[in-house]
Image (cartoon, rainbow, N blue to C red):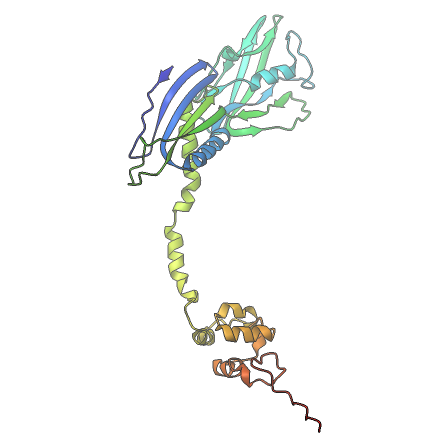
Length: 345
C-alpha cells in the first residue's frame, strides 16, 4: 500500500494519488485528490468522472464459446462435473488484460482427469490473464476436452440472444467493465487554502475520488482513460475556426436591431430575395408605442394586415389616429361632444 500526504495547493489546480493498494489479483483500489476547486465544481467533476469511469472505460472479455456437438446449454458433457451453463458462467468471470482491437480467438485443449483453470486457456500474444487460478471446469474421467473461445475488447455490458445452434456455439454476456465501483466525496477548504485571485473571502473545495478495478486496469490507468475519453468527447466544441468563418460570411444577412422602421422597409425593397409580408410580425419592427397600440387595437398583428406599402402613407394614416373618424378602431382621442338637451321653459 502506498500513501502520500495530502498537501493543498494555493495556486494551480493539481491532482495526485494519495492511496493505492492491491487487495487481491482481481481487486485494486486507488484514492485520488483534486484541488483547489471553486464551489460547485467538485460536484460537477465528480459526477462526470464517475459516469465516465463506470460506462466509458474499455475492457476485454470472452464473448463466445464453442463446445462441439452439444444440444443445449443446460446439457451435461460426459466426464465433466459442471453443465454447459456453469462453464459459460465461469468463462464470463475470467478477467483479461489486453490492448487489442477487434476480435481474437483462443482455445482450451486438455485431457482429464484434472481441474481446468484460466491458466489452461491458450491466448493470442496480445492478451494475458489477470488471475490464472480462476476455475472453469472439473474433468472427472480421462476424456479430451476442447473449447474454442472468442475474445473482444469493448465497453459496457452487452447481452446476447440465445439461439439454438447445432454446432455447439453459445454466446456469453459480455461484461467489459474493468471499473467495479467509484465513489467521490467533497470537502470545503478552510482559510488556509485560498485561490490566488485576490479574493480572501472565497471558499474552495477538495474532491476525493475512490476507484476500485478488477485488475485488468489499475485505478490510475482507468482514471487516465476516462479523462481522455471525456476530452475526445468535447473536442468538436473546440473546433470553432470553421464555424467562425461561416459566421463572418453570413453576418451581413442579419438585420441590425438598431435600424429604424423606415430603413427596415427600405432594406426589404432592396433585398433580392423577396420576403413575404405575411411572415413579419409587427412586434419585430420596434415601432413607437403609440403606433404599436394603434395596430394592436385594429387587430393588425402582421405587417401585411396594415395594408400600407409605403412608410409615408403608414405614418399618416396610422400615426395620426386622431384623424380617424369616431368609432374607427384606430381612433385615439376624446369622444365628440354630445348635444345637451334644451332647457324647458
